[in-house]
Amino acid sequence: MSAEKTELDGSSSANPLLLQLQQILTSCSESIDGGGDLGQSQTSVAELVNFLDSLSDAAISEPENEDASANALEILSETYNFLCSPSLDQEVFDALSFELPKSVSKFSGVSLKCLEIADNIIDRFIQTCSPRDMLSILCEALDSPNKTVKASAYVSPLLSGLSKVFLSIQRRHFEQIKVAVPVVVKVVNTISSESDYEDSELETLFDRAVDIGHSIQVVSTKLEAGVNEKLQALLGLYVLQILALVSVSSRCNSSNHLPFAVRLACFLPYCGLSYRGLITGSDVDKISGIVIGENEDDSMIFSSHVYLGASISVIWAQMCDEVAQAAKEDLSAVKGELQIIQTKRWQAIGMLKHIFSSVDLPWEFKRHAVDFLLDITNGNNSKTLDDEHNDCSLYMTSLFSALQAITMIIIYASDTVLRKNAFEALKRVLADIPNSQRFDILKALIEKSDSSSMVAILLDCVRGEMHMESTLRTSIGKNEVLGADDKACKNTLFWSTSILELAESVLRPLNGGPPILPENGDAVLSALNLYRFVLMTESAGKTNYTGVLSKNNLQKAYNEWLLPLRTLVTGMMAENKSDYDQLAIDTVCALNPVELVLYRCIELVEEKVKHSNMTSVQHA
Image 1 (cartoon, rainbow, N blue to C red):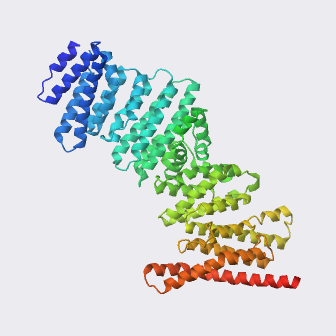
Image 2: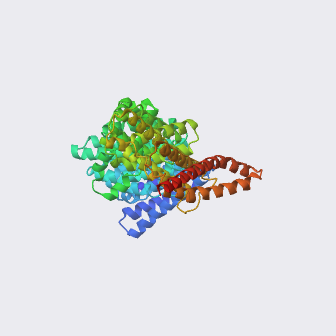
Image 3: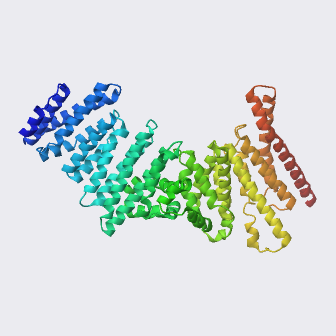
């Protein structure tokens, strides 16, 4: 004890802060090492922490204050020198290890030199204290954010410390690392999601996050097969989550974080993860099962970014060949397999929804994900298999979510080419869904959409499907080749009474009144065109698959849909035609096509009602 005191007392400095630090450190050593009162030692440690915190706070809050920065560096250096004393007792190390890592990490935001010394101090604790204790201490420090410090700098020495602690763990490696991984992911997520950090700060953060992955891999290679498999799976989950966070934080320019995507891709082969398994989700399910087992609490911890990371890992390869090379993958072969195997393609589409629906992911990734989707649905591959032989019901939920996310791209993307490609992708995915379920999914998309323009597009898709069915029916009738009832039934799937319900949902919404105009003008126009198409086609073909020609349905459409809508449109047109402000002009322009198609529908229905009445009289 006297040796430490002599070293401190012998320091020659006129800096009163340095003298104060030396006095506090001496007090800590004496109270801890002397075996005295526990309360006294805790008070001494608390005094040291408060002193260090006051200096780091002063330097960070006033970055232009050179004196504050110089004081911070000098005090931190002296603290490190104290901890390097060969005569310092283990009891002192153990007592200070609970608080000092957190305090010295706060200095990291002052300067790069302070960051280096903070790293050294934490390394010193790792060298002298129990790895198990240091793991808990560092995790607790990471999980205790401090608003007065810059988080990206604060966590850097702590993350670096974890990398080294992992290498020092002697037993129960999987269990201990499993506790730390969610803490690291949470910290990286919190910091990378904030917009006020420079690219260089995020690069330091991700660099240390990747180093943690390397440490887990090194530990894994030294373990027996069973534990090694579990740690490999845990590493896989960690890598996918960090990759997702790297991608989200790349903002407008993914090339900034390409090196991290390449480094993370290198882990995939070691973890047994392939692009085939990642883009279909099967590998994610496999490693999740290994790590999580039946523990539902763990499932909540590891699920947030894993699936986004799995799908984005493949899209990084779509964007850059270097990533695919790092992962030792042939992306063209993966695409070829997805083109051929329909169920795998459905799984891939379901995984891509995580990219399409992400509100934080840069548009660049969504553009490449749409291109990938177009590649795997290219040509007539989906038609080479009998749709009815593949059970799509297992994938309907994920396909619906993917289609919903694609509609969001069509609505909100500013890039015209991306919107066009997304619409093409929408049509291809719909075409890939079996006929027996395609109408149901289109109907659900329409009912769940809040966009009038999107509803109009989807109703036009329905009309297109009905036109194809009608054309095919006519062709079959002429050739008389496929006369069996079941074949004919497949060509009337869209021609059912559900079509009238679909039109009614737009022309007479749930509140019972006419739709709101002009806000819903696009949807109303498309619904009117759909109704008119059905009415004309059924009349020309002398069929009534939809029930549209029945007298009750004609009268219902006339009295409950068309007449209330005509009253609304006529009134709005009269009200706005005399005004010349821009809003009135826009309203008239929006209602003109609605009015035109509406009157044609009314004339057509009146004609059919008149014909129906005459037929009834003749029969009587």
